[in-house]
Length: 245
Image (cartoon, rainbow, N blue to C red; front, side):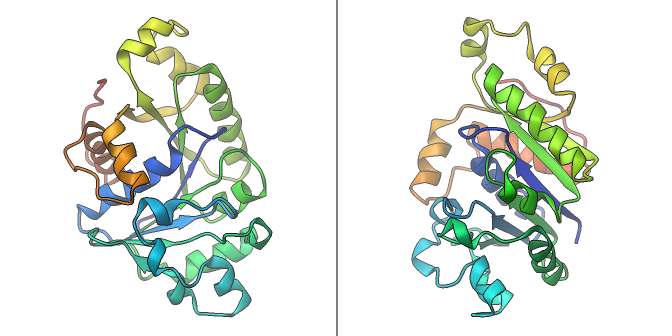
């Protein structure tokens, strides 16, 4: 396995799950097998975004209870070769403990190149479970003060979890709106506040949001998907320039 990555945010609404899907899809373009794990128990949504809802029978909680094998909870994503999903439980009380999730991830380490764990927003017990197996973290923020404060908080918690490689994604970025709001002098100020190294800037892209909410394939040449592809290249070790849209 190349890496285990947790994607986190301090508050909801940053587009964290979209980032998980966009990055996972992009990493498959380099021949990788990628497993997305939805850790948002009671609020799962990746199955909708990936178009696999109708096929679901088992989830993480079923594997933990012994109702099925771990392999039974892994679903291929339609029309996305190399991308797979392990869905979260529908009930919040079925939330998986950190050590158990670590065992589940260890059980598939020989099958996948990347495991991307979509953490619930915030820093509760679901976040702790999502962070436990991770070797690297991506913190997703928007350009509002509440989102950035949340990013600072979640980054601190990730460090406390022992994750040293933490990078920043500025998501849903609109240059015109950013300058009109005038909350920050420039993007460098946001980077300085979070004290995280920037790995990507993803533009606001309503076409991608609409496609994922409908469980449809997104256009690979859409602005956001091009940005996620660049992030995937950086994770793969290729140096590509940051682009501000």
